[in-house]
Image (cartoon, rainbow, N blue to C red; front, side, top):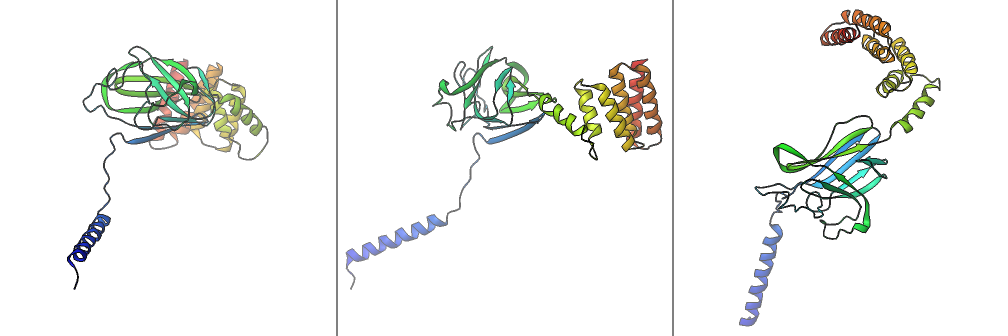
Length: 289
């Protein structure tokens, strides 16, 4: 016969086992993040840039000067400090930054912000921030937004071959940071070497358009575009681009004559592309008359 003490122990053990089994079978719950993680990437010229950050919301709060105090180091987001990486050296608001991965801190001010590029310490927030690990500091001027943003946004805009703008925006404030990269010193020697190689399927059109866009050797650009046209008979859209090169070279008569040839080719085509290139060429002719 089982004693009362043993019976009590068995009942307790069974209850514990049953509770453990029920606990083990409970479904895993996921809750929405208060500040969701985000990643934005952008190629500027030949440079790959990536920003990893968390996006807090205003949620009815005053952000700058309250939730994010003025004149204090901010992680530029929430949770882990925001990270930014560059695949090549860049300049931010004119300040040189080597290629690498960094933490992006800021010091918001009412009239001026300080942007801090900091060694990658993978730190939580800005609590352990130490200025001795700064790689660079520079100033940025905030601009007012007419429409408020509920959620912090870091984005890229104003893309060019060698520049872009990194925008930090929240509430009714946008802080633009100018990004510049050096493409020419790397790409031009490569173009010259490839085009002089005499190989097959050379990038005549791309090389010509790059030289046109960047005010480089326009005689070479014209010759390369001629080669591109010769390899693509009937490509009236390339003939239009040759007219653009002649226009920039100051050869008005040649540009007008070339634009008229492009119109002839476009008229032999059909669809929207015909109308587009007739209009483009007519606009070129009109501005040269």
